Length: 329
Image 1 (tube, rainbow, N blue to C red):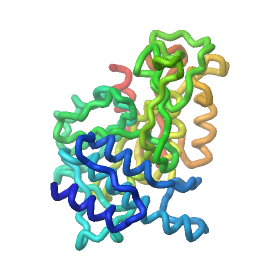
Image 2: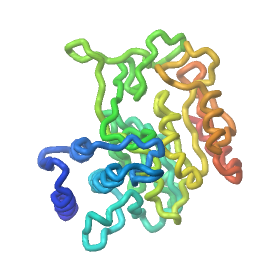
Image 3: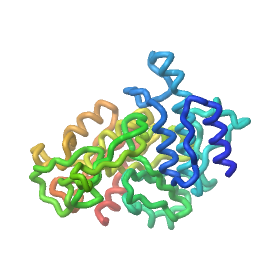
Image 4: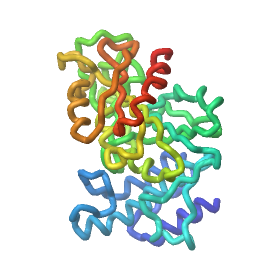
């Protein structure tokens, strides 16, 4: 109740945001409603703080964005082992996009799992890794709260920049294939999952969901320096490179990244419209300082692999331990 009271004061003071009743709504719905009342600037940097010569109007709106983002975090982290660092005097003007996350005292390492579906593959590892914390993202309506006390799952899509509303396409064959990209219905790829059809509503239109879009930099820049961002897994059904773009501004904080990709030469084998091939991903990330290390075949889709990258060469030796895990899955 204290948390909600603070949030109410914050948004009452801002004045420009439309009030939304908190009663009878889930945390996800409430957070989405608040974010949806803000017009987010389209910044190529993915940073909301009025940088790189942006207009005064853009800079002013960053205060509203920062307050709304902190509100989203407060709601999303309720009843989890994480919290946001306290505000001095509960002053909303001190809220900003770098407000630090407070982890359990034993935490020294963080793994981020983008696309957990119903349950993260890494839950079992937490049992024997007492200094490890896991944060997951899942945009679909199949998301489940993480029951482990060193794990939190957040309802959001990971996107290149801040966006109050992004569209998730609901696939008809298998909810594992829901994507920010529409399916390529004439894909020639051999599948065991029905990833190339889109579910229809009762009126025959394609089924979609609107969800908040959060760049990974929004999370990583809140992680204190005492906690190493050791591993990021991205499984975003063709949208993986776009997710990666959302953390490029904090590349130096991340040790190892793995993302799903299609290692094919024929675009007809891609599963989604606008999905890049592995070669294109490697080429683009190389221009941003990321090095491709190796790939592991992914069971289920012909040509699909888990591709590993590092930004700093000193972490290349860590890739092997993650490769072994993916080979055993």
